Structure formats: C-alpha cells, structure tokens
Length: 102
Image (cartoon, rainbow, N blue to C red):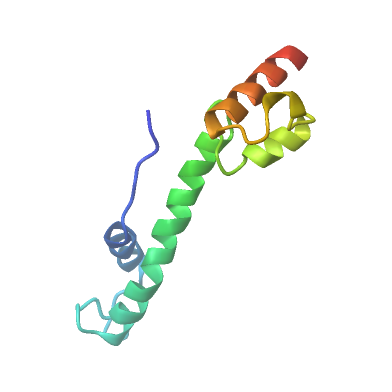
C-alpha cells in the first residue's frame, strides 16, 4: 500500500483544526494568519513527499537519490561495467552485489 499523499490544503485544514478557538485565531480565507499559514504549508507538503520517497530509495532495486550511498557501501562503481552505466545498470549491479554479499 503506497503512503498517502497529502496536499498543502490538507495540512492547512489539519493545522487550523488544531489552533485554539477565539477571535485571536481567525480561520477566514482573507485573514493575515491564514495567509502566513498558507505560505508555510507547501513546505509540509514537500517534506511529506520527500519522506515518502525515502521509502522508495531504501531499497537498492528502486534507489535513485541514494544510489551513490548504496554503491559506496558495497564498494562500487565497478570499472568492469563500462564508462557510463545507466541508472538501471547501476541499480542491477547494486542489487547483485548486495545479494551476493548477503
């Protein structure tokens, strides 16, 4: 099951629901506080997306951004592969080395 994807609007609704009630905590769309929060919520959306992507990168067969770390850990790149292997070739090499080493 893939991790849920939350948008900035989802974070905004959740954040505003957690705010105290009262005149000092307006939830109107044109309120200054709402504008400030709306500026912050895309950051939460990006961080959540990055955290979800970390799950993909945690496995060598699907690693993209963490592929260099996988290679370094396993003593790669191997010059036998050729001058510029593709991402898929690099992933396959990491998987085969990882499985071979246990």
